Image 1 (cartoon, one colour):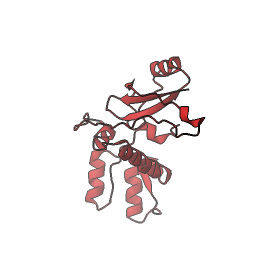
Image 2 (cartoon, rainbow, N blue to C red):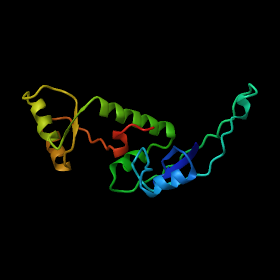
Image 3 (cartoon, rainbow, N blue to C red):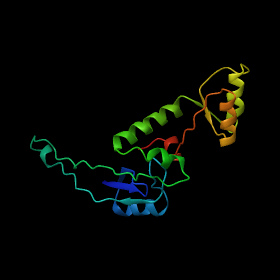
Image 4 (cartoon, one colour):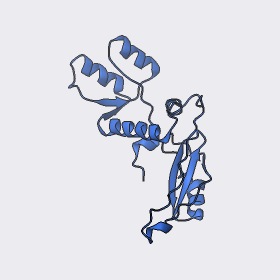
Length: 166
């Protein structure tokens, strides 16, 4: 098993486990390796120190890989709200908390899709039972909801957040 340190083009660092170098290259070529934070398929291997478990047999503490800092550019690429949100997440710990919060939202809300504006209005005006929902709305629809006094919040979700990471 090969454990590789990987990084997307937006400088999000993550780890990938592969059966071999050929397995990694094959999955990369087929577009199966993407960033778990932003779903960017432009992934590359980063230099890493090997992790050797030599001390385990002798009872000594095992050697661990050196910790690495993640640098995120000050300005994320425009157009992708996930990249814009993650631009301020400068450390792996902050990124992990962001993913944890997004997964909590995914697990505890109902996806109403493009019916979101109608469902939000129905709940606000008492025509539907209040519940936690998420879905899609255009910028204009979101502004209309806010002007009516309906609290909404844009929440960028990468496709990778919607699935279980291994």
